[in-house]
Image (cartoon, rainbow, N blue to C red):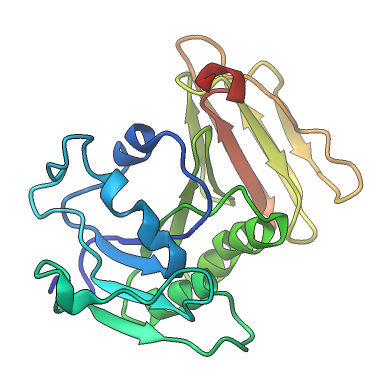
Length: 236
């Protein structure tokens, strides 16, 4: 098993993934994988269509968590590759979702860098909880990125967040409380000393200028930064 405190923790949830190739671009060979309940349905498709393993060490769960109310508890002993995978079976009645528990467990095991996939789409309530995990991980002193088929999501804070021109759009949303002294540079719409309020979400669909890299800083508070790589019509 990989060392618990090295590399990055990748949490795989059960929300839909359409473009596995896009998700695989974010994976690294030193990643530590926590699969959450029905997130196991993504395991085989996170490998190449031929079934060959994408990464040198292979994409294999290091930890499986869940109450298995939406996915049958895996019979790991039937698969030699999965036979030794640690599994935490959670009660069906609990305060945290399986994905939220996985984030807590990743923190407990010493990880400070997280990638969350399979976490957007399907049920809106679960999607919103998973977005809030970015803030939870930020408050715990961690960095975290949530990736879906179309976008990449992180927390914008005092330290600069950069958006290169491979992204078609980017948006800022106030989901987490008071903010002030917001600055955006290198974009079609730049601001300094701005404030975004929960009832005045005006920082949507900004654009990076061609050949430039936009920069976002938030003097006080935090914002959700969504970088849009493409739109749904691009997948159809």
